[in-house]
Image (cartoon, rainbow over the protein chains, first blue to last red):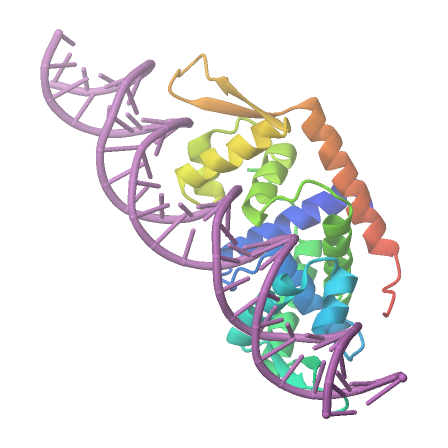
Length: 114
Length: 114
DNA sequence: CCGCCACGATCCGGCGCCGTAACGAAACTG
DNA sequence: CAGTTTCGTTACGGCGCCGGATCGTGGCGG
């Protein structure tokens, strides 16, 4: 994809996200949710912290938010009860599907020059 | 573009943006910068506020940030000295070009399954 | 058993963004 | 010319996120 087309796409996605009344997630929250949704499990707080490159408290707080939205759930690892496994919920899948739809649509739409 | 491919693309872009040590802009700041960079001038505070759908003070603050980064500059409108015209600087163009490069690259890259 | 380490959550002070309201300056209106 | 409207900015109180330090819990080794 060309750089300018990519920017235009990004612009349209942001505009959609801002207007669509989707719960507005921070960059980190969204990255976290996408990671959990797209990457193969298992996902732990520590792993997410290392992979995504932000602190454990930040991960915990982002999870608090996503759990509050019911997009994600925590589950104690039965193997090692110190760890917490993070999984996408049905509602989380639905949300990501909507987001994907929105993003996919933005790819085709023309860039309405104001 | 397929919904899932779009999500994967988005994920990669966010990961790049988080790691690349680009100055981290909020969603609104980025949307504002992209708007100024991609849409035809003139751009005023009022117009940006209406088009992007957030309050004038929020626009002023986002501009403060972008001006501080030297991506954008303010200029009094000689026609109507109440208005302020917003323009992209050279540095802003450069930044957007880098961002576009990063985003364009993310389109082709495979989704490295952790 | 007991000390040590790993894990995730919580506490803390700080900072940045938020929207409403109020402001000065400039332009319009009669 | 006052009076009103339209600019953008600033003042204000509130809220959410930040990372470092600390905590309780659970696993592990001697």
